[in-house]
Length: 202
Image (cartoon, rainbow, N blue to C red; front, top):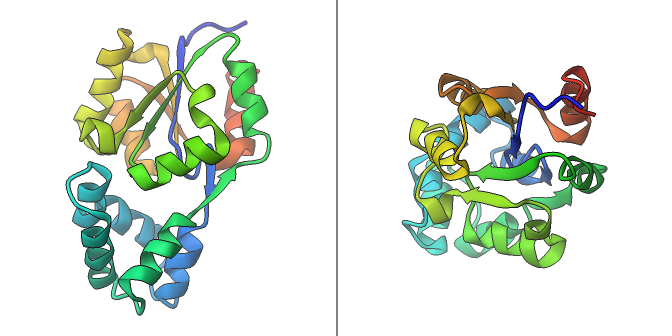
């Protein structure tokens, strides 16, 4: 068993959990921008960052996003759609987490809101699978900011090169690498498994 790493840290949406956010937002925007453009705009949006760090209310968030992305929906429609952004774990992910937890300490580093996290806890019992959860709405720290990654290193009490990190956004992968983590861009369980196989972890 390769023990180069002691910790495996996962992003949430797009890595462990399948999202419908992109589909719904692109539909609302009538596909006027590319998925890559949307990902970057969403990640760096002041409204998203403020909401996911617990600084504004769901109502304030909804209205700010509707204005920023010029969405043809009401506040109520947006919030209802936002709650359905989460589809659930990717196929095979729950079994993979159970397998990895036998030899590694697992953690989650995610820009997320209390609304989405509470749904994941109540419907999918995610807290029973992941030992350490670094959630932006609790820490007040958003990726790709350097401090979000340094906070993980400090909290785990380890060296950054002992951490293997997975994210679906290249900007976050780059930020993780800059603090010394070994990081890979992936989407879904199948791509995570491919990297783990290449690293001889599974």
